[in-house]
Image (cartoon, rainbow, N blue to C red; front, side, top):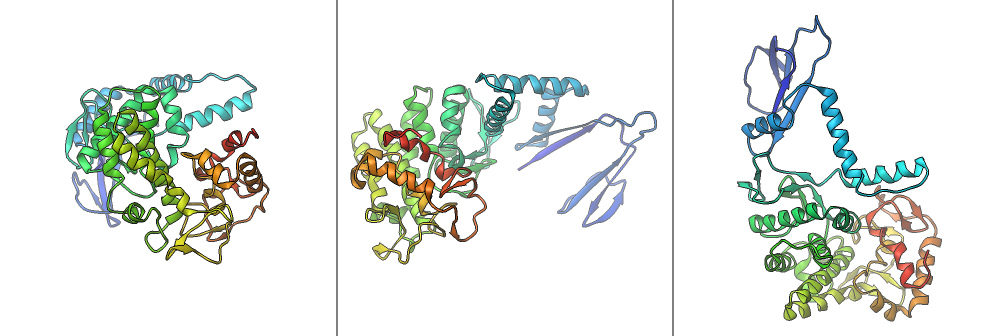
Length: 402
């Protein structure tokens, strides 16, 4: 749902519309698909024409209220100045020193972290919920655009440090979306679930915030929502729960889903433990170990399974349907919930260090399908894509800081 209003700084002399490329002059209203509109103005005294647009997911009246409240005048320079002040406030949350080029790089990256999520309600606090009904946000700001597979590793932990107020609003939005739609968001857009990525990564966002001391949300409701989201009957979860692993017969991207579900389950476990819910802790700490069921200790790689065995032949460089935007090289280092346990399986810190070195020293070539997201390769380490973002820190656990 997108409602909008447009205002012009000059009177409209004439207007009309196109529908399916057929023009009609003087038309005041049109309904249908493939619609366009045109407007004519008198520019004889001034060539400057200003246009203001406001949107709402609720109604046209909501869009009108938003425009009146947020941009009532026509002073472009004032609007520009106010926008600059707001961005300066955002970017001043972290102050760094260094040469100008490095500061530009840093603050450009910080700017990128503040582009989304977006406020998803009108100035009167009305918003369209996950159930597509109209609700009123009480005591919080409702947000949208939670690309959680992209953000739970780095951006959301940053928000818990530099923007705790918004982090709490994000969590409250998550929980309302659970109440309105039955599960926590995976990759939410405009109050709708796209399911375009994997995992249930709103859970580590909530747990990270809680473990850092952020309060003000219903923790019992949060645990309920986590458990419901982790037992949903879709995306390989039934096989994962029953067998402790997702095989390629069960679901595409089976290796990545097994690994990321296991991490999210560990997050549920430590949250349950913090709340004194021992039975839930035992259930999910057990599930957090399922990453071992996809680890081939002989080769040291996370590998796809089929019919209880390993897929063969196997090429760790191959980008295929068993992985999410990655290959086995990149996902074989995904065990953030049990780094010490992994090292015990694989021979200790020295072997972890050697495995990491081999990742960076491997030939810079992937096989299989072309995956445009795999960028910035250093050996098989893909600096430009999410599954590799944590890997460099593993050197600390191997006592070999990079």
